[in-house]
Image (tube, rainbow, N blue to C red):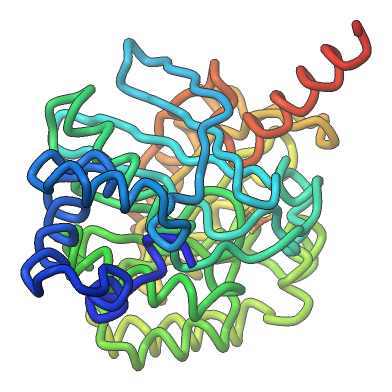
Length: 349
Ligand code: SF4
């Protein structure tokens, strides 16, 4: 059981005969000061070395690669898990916030045809500890490298968070309570897993939902996002309406702009119909090409026209800068790149 799987009582138990205040001190040092347990200089040296030798207090991620872009404002880390699987997280600094994009699974079973992670397939769910540890490292990085507090989280890395519901929600509760990140600053991205959306509505956590729509009629959407066959748009809209009413949180639609696929006038009209029903904000994201998806992203002027068209139809839409384009920041791409690099190196030797 690694450190981030422990609750305060379990931590006290692991520390055994240490005075009661030590557990609190370690907890505060890790979650509050963002220090590794074995690096806490506020602890006596012998306790630090005991902590360093105790497998129950180990961290479970090791960094395999880091790529920085956007003048140091986007930092993408590739992590190796204890079983050798790899996931990535991306830290993005803006003028008013620092956002971490977190992974919730190693791989993904949703099979969205344009996505590098979907193309690679599903390996396993991340544990609560593996999710929390991504936040821990990013919060420390943000503090030391950017001099700013990590303020926002988006579950938009590898994986479908609703498919790993229990671990994701358990991690979010700790993130809010112990890392002190407001639930209102946490966004969960989903392809539209209806049972998860309905369950989340009962949690009393005011999270924002970002729904990967990408096409606004069932035929086209099922071709791009196969889960649509199971949870078609009409049912999804009803579930989202329910979530919005219960949580009082805004829903946003994510729309990856693919040239000639979903960037036409008819697409804008259909999308506007759905977005108006939910008063959803639309984020337009020019798509990064991925290994098994040859279609380019829409040209910048097409993206702008599409946004204006939505505006004329009464829908607010924002064009999202594709942060880290040069560093393969679309989900799964760094992992794919590193695997390719590793294979090339293996070939050379
Ligand atoms: S886009 Fe998201 S949900 Fe779809 S395959 Fe990729 S990681 Fe999974």
